[in-house]
Image 1 (cartoon, rainbow, N blue to C red):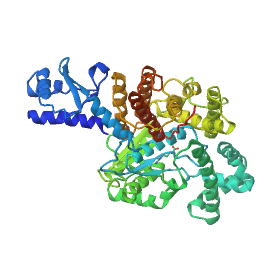
Image 2: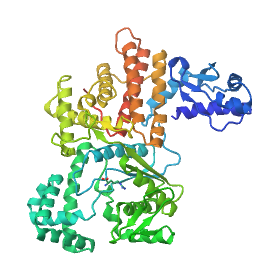
Image 3: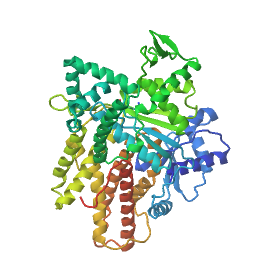
Image 4: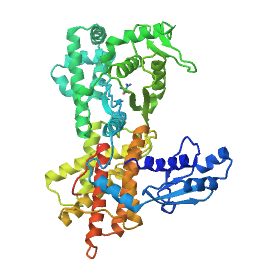
Length: 565
Ligand code: ARG
């Protein structure tokens, strides 16, 4: 349920009843329980316009408020705030609805769109690094979220599979023969070895250069080698995707090379649009106010990263028909995206009504605030990092329960990978992110383990109860009231998080929800003797709704729950 919208509608109606014109009316979540559930503080802004004092305006609104069974109490406070309390019976009925619905009462958009989410995008000539980890995790969440809300999501993995490096790499792959396949497991090393061959041996270097030209002109042998190289590299990325449990498949790959055939046309169209200028032999677009131009073709005829992105924008907007195109890429590329978005719009490659956004994220740092590296300064291999997460998760959970070996393995994977994902998603994505094992694998605080633990606890309550739960939700006290309202806010949170492409709004919500639930559970016993059955059933239902909300929230973040922890 879009709770806030419903409350807004009431206030809007009151305005209409009072004959006051106001364009943007929005309530906010109350910051303290004593302020009710929602607050309206728009009267202050209207005071000038209406030449009345804010309290007077607030009074007029109250006089015209039709509560419709939804609002129990509305009071004027301070200089002219209106504090609103929702009606417990209305809340109970709404929770009951949510509980009986397999989508927790959450609707799908009335106007779904096609949305492209561009994420992961590793480079085939290099090891997948921690920057791609962030892109993969955040991008997958955004895609899941939009999908859950009803959009048609098209995932696009814009892998870097083209460029002069590949001449050297495939020449080396050829030289290595069968052995090459295995050594490609460590791309960083493979690249280094190829490079030393290149530097040491003139004949090899010549061959590498010749192969660059040959791939570009479509030579069959070189293309076969190149395809093989990409296939093996991508296979290694897929191992990471598999471990990470993200929804990216081969079908989602639209590599840079996919756009090769259309690059000349991009330049041609820019020329036709009168946007091209030559500078030192290169073809450039100079944007007003920008110091550096967007180079779309080098003087040697080669195309660039930006040219490919312009071709991709054209494809996504016109062939795929996307109305929202989100690029989940490192913040350091924000200059690049600002420019290509502008060029694409000005050249008419992308219709005006298409939303283009750079979902930027900060750099991953170690505990000391330094860029994330191995002890000897090398790049951390993602696959190793994920394996370590599982090992550490095992250590964190073994003390709690007696698991079979098999169970332990499975749960440790869910907990470990979940911790890595959650920690990444829980911060404001644009900030740099400090990678800290101990913090992310803690049972306390805003961690996935805290959420998974709460979920498992609720499951254990149900195991102990051992009977079907059927009955009615009744809001008993203030804590239950707050928990229920919090549960009903879930849809608002998801919608806002989707609009802002901000997964941390979901984690913040989950943390507040679970914290509130833990307090509720401490004070309002469920199975304890002496609790009457009607109250018990109602509390069980609230607990179940909480568990399902946690599960759904985590699912959108790409994290699973377990029944026992
Ligand atoms: N391969 C790029 C990198 O590693 C990321 C690709 C992002 N997507 C895009 N359409 N440019 O930096």
